[in-house]
Length: 163
Image 1 (cartoon, rainbow, N blue to C red):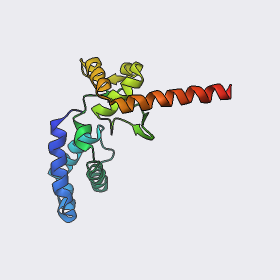
Image 2: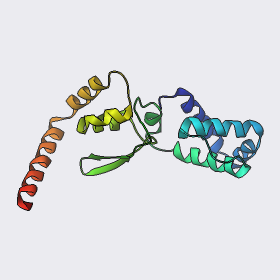
Image 3: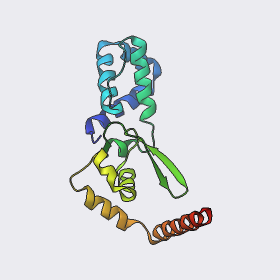
Image 4: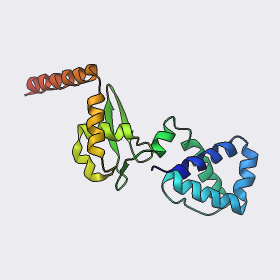
């Protein structure tokens, strides 16, 4: 998303969310409705639906909840974005993360591109993405590389047993 304006808007949403009564009054004002529409577009990446007071309050609450994501700032500053709202599963060690445009970070994108460089065709990315991915790959620790090789070997053994 790479948008400093979204981070400024998020700070204002955080401030407003501290006092629900004040937030409700603000969202009910013409200035507040315009703010919520802009914040929703910039932070959520899409236009909000509806134009009633409840729709604006729902959108405000949705944004307020979204900005609580622990990697919110990284997501907003990410240089990568999926085209056509893709959803990808990223396996990190024994855990997996479902990655969308709403939680993609540079780290997630580069790890996915290490595993599957063809994904680059379906992403908006910086011009130097190949260098970034190579640097990320080189920065993986030896232990992670060894663990990856062990997993590949185990998969090969399992495949042989199945065959």
